[in-house]
Image (tube, rainbow, N blue to C red; front, side):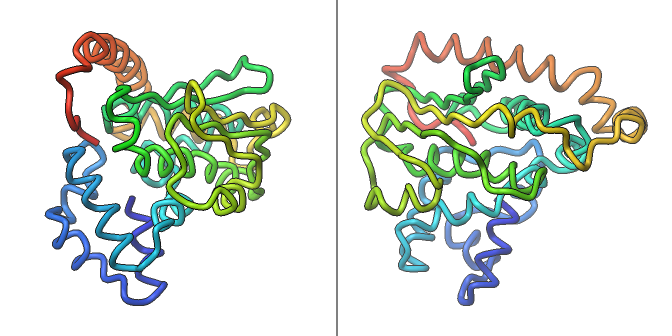
Length: 248
């Protein structure tokens, strides 16, 4: 969320330190790539921002400023991957370590490729702003990697709209439907698999080999993230009725 906070300051009246202090956060934890905050704090943050800026769509605007830099050094390394799809996969895998409120899955073999976001059924309404923020942040990767707007055939959300649907469609640039069986974002394959202008395999390999976090990524983080995500999510699905506000 750091890039989003910086963008808020540029709007005027958005002092980052005051905001995170009022919500009960601290900057050190926010900057730590592996730290987590409770789901309640995350929800309180978005509600505070909506009131502070008198903007019910502020979480969408923050998401548009988020991206790979949110994943720290590992994220910057991911920008050297071969195409947008590889960067999205990296983001999904790191997210498994960063938060367990919402599970993100990327299906690169879909026609067209698509991503899904899933949270416990009894929290779909409560977590609507968090889910919308996450979906927007992933669409922003196309601007970071390819310097172009995301090519999205459609977006579906499980929850009901919190804003005028026209606001969502203007944000995503595609039809947006609510009350659907799953939260799902489609992205055209010609964009997902387009070679990245930042792709540099030798530099990527060297970065991942030489940087401590890179070595963890290459040998442990991605497989560990997938394993943790699968095991934890399976366990939590079995006890959704008693599950409230995991971490983000």
